[in-house]
Image 1 (cartoon, rainbow, N blue to C red):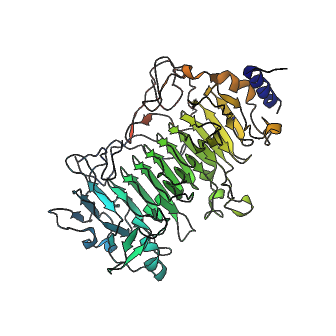
Image 2: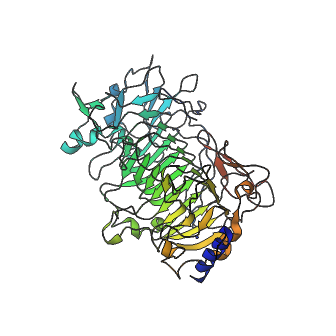
Image 3: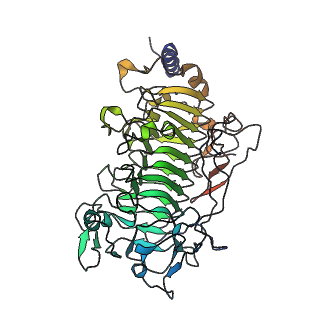
Length: 550
């Protein structure tokens, strides 16, 4: 009997029912503000709850980072043309304390200098390093190419190795690491070994000797507690931002990334360096533009091994090896899996545009190809809440693989997915066997999603004899009765591909969402180009499906 595509789809789902603005390298103009100097933060906005409702605490920041100022008994250092300091390395950064602030003024050429911070601020008086843009809005550039750095003396390994691992390095000695450091309004670039030929170099501390960067060098590298990176452009490094928890005496706690542009990082033909690679106890990312990775590299847009991932109102642009990779705990394997925050992950209000070549999957939650923790002790076994996102899957069977929206690799990983646009963009005409998930992952909530009619299966179709089988059954929600009803042809999505896939007036996503449960962060904002957020308000009888309100 010859089966039509519709008959095949019905049969497959029945089986489950039986068993969820940038410019060139010279500089980037992004919004900044100069009124009422503060500690480097932007205008405040309401964010998470107070903890009593189960909603994690976080703050949504405004558009513009204000120009930092000293706080309390802190001192203000100004560097740039006509300022007290002509060079960053003349500032005694080794002695920075609570409330101290460094203002770096934009000039025609980059500062070929790096910064090492090893000291502590406080919650009320953080240490701040901020840029002051020029009249056209161009940010000051810190470039690691043949860059000089002020000498510090921490311990032999740090002095000979770690000190050369980033343009801005926030790091200390065992059990004495920096705390409360804010970095804003800077373009940070040039710490890499892209071709692995030792041609990209920096000066050895206190000498005229040039030494090569390692391929894992970063724009910003972090170790310590309470760091805020705001309104920066981070590009042309090995890792854009890197930080890793390595024990109670080598912590990484509470990292916030807001309103940044992080793109074009990586190493040629290598999959180990990424735009973001962080393992932190607490990681909040709001209003950022991530991607693409650097052309020729194979890294990930956003890789986190963290506890307490909150990923809201960002834009992710391919190509990248993966768009979001929420991998298992590695260095923190004996600690993070015990935390409640490791068992709850929030991904909401994001626009994620996939890759046309290579790995196409949008959201990965689970282990890497080779599990990083022995006996799977660090595996993701909690709840993944994904809602009001716009996922745009790209690529066809001739150029890509892993063509699925949710890549949950453990049965203990529980997906809650609602109010999402799950769209497939393909102009080649090649059949592509799109799936919602791979052959595992438990689904506890799957509702009010708008799903491309190109979907061939709820679960991965790459093994013909096992199509549609979920090895986690019967511990997963029956997807079949709901998925088919959510599928619509592409024209019914009503998306504007030239405007971040926003809804147009004929979209079936309008007013079609469900109310967000009270135990989850509300979707009160949406991403705004080139970076940042704007207020989102319900305009009709209900919230719209996807990352934008029409």
